[in-house]
Image 1: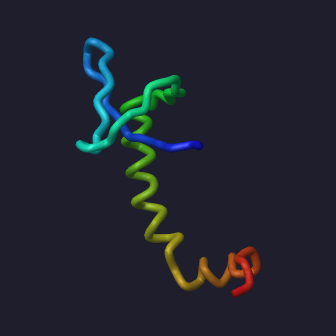
Image 2: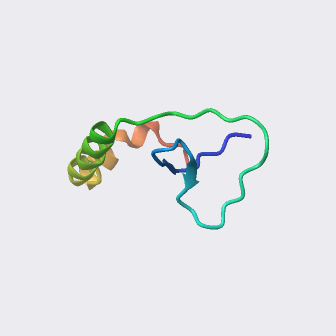
Amino acid sequence: MFQTIEITIDNQGVIHPLEPNIKLPSGRALLALLEPVLYETELLSEQSLTKEWLTAEEDEAWAHLQPVK
């Protein structure tokens, strides 16, 4: 099973899940570290591109790749 959980890491390296009631299972996990500046830039880019991508013209252009209903 693959699950993504957003976390913060404090100065001592302790992991804190952002969802308050999430229960982490014992075992092993992979951790992908995002550079704070890069992450912020990605979020700003996403907001800018959303205005361009979420249009009727874009839906029409990519319609041939959507599953048949």
